[in-house]
Length: 341
Image (cartoon, rainbow, N blue to C red; front, side, top):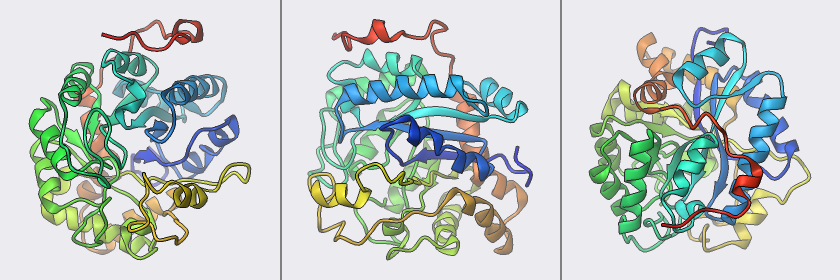
């Protein structure tokens, strides 16, 4: 728990891992008092082999660096917190990373992945993306959800199409999350979700995490007040037990391709109708404490604020997460890729 007395859980970091230099910037979250961070190791835009490489790179870096600890259970999160370390688990945005084998999900679980979303913006073999034809959850997608349920992983509906999210929430036997999705009624954008989706998510026992991306908060709006508007909308709509934060914060190291350039060049994943060319910005982890103060100023009680900042996602981890295989996969064991059904 940080110095302000709040346990802070950021359900999704939006930067890409391309080198250890990216991982060094995890200090941004640690210095902001974040206790747990879900770090994105890959998404459908990149090959599955890059996702696997990123996982191994991140594991090695975390093991060697002071102040950070890979945590796949609530007990490990608490141990990290007691030691003053920031706890980290991994997430993946889209099922392309598991190729055509649901068995590969278990390998990722052993590598520290604790949440996977179905499709990143466009359709894949598991389901539909929010910027594509709404195909719903496929047979393969249903099998993947079942395997994630069996492993206690968080099934994430962010970036997915409406029908796919509703199918997932019907099919999953466990609570489902939107790790970083804002309210479409406040900001009309295909990446944001309808109130109906948020209500269904809460009905599963899940949590909706608000993000800080300016395009999804408002018109390039990353102000604390506007991010809090989305949080407050969900508090009113689905109740204080089902709202969290997944900032989707990204940083720039100066050595990599600029995010805005990547988006402008790949209109399949980021169609120009939804991303017209304005630079994309995001609210920073340092604003999390400002959000807490803003919620307090608006009259929300301490229990509500603690739930939003981290308590609600923490509750799901306590209920669902199970330990990985104690023998972590070695690089040599994974060199040949996934085993197919």
